[in-house]
Image (cartoon, rainbow, N blue to C red; front, side, top):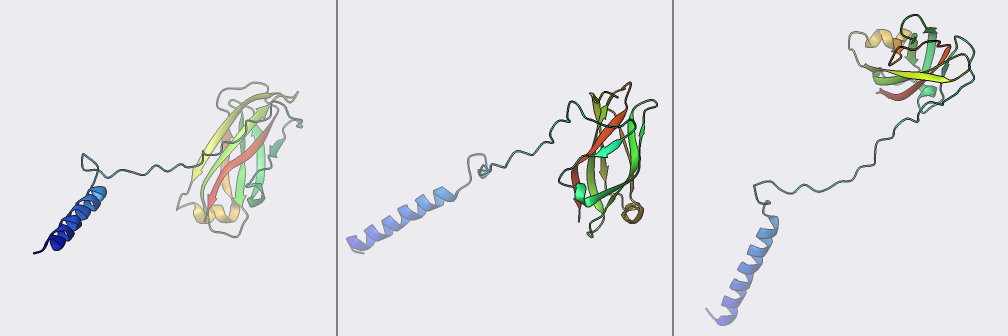
Length: 162
């Protein structure tokens, strides 16, 4: 073997070792995980500190999903824990509801915010067909006991359907 051939073989071996070292797992056997930066999740804005509402009114706050839902038989129950009750139906022509979050902001007669409440719904295979036709019964209680509740604003910060 001449010097040129031996130098070529040696250079090839060095290159193979260097390339192999770059592909080997990190110490401890685990391959390094690339860092991926995701956007921060959007949070719903805080409810307004005041609102002009009629006594007993439950208003649906305009938002990204309000054009996809319809409320029926909505009422405010102020006996015990203030609660918004009713039925909500997804009106778009896509399939059944998978998940939904509702939030209620409770106000006194002067329109001052007293507190909030939230409810989360997830798909229930047994109820899915019925909910598509007549709507899903909702109940959004206040997070804490509130007195002198006069009205509420309901919002839909999360709505997932197929």
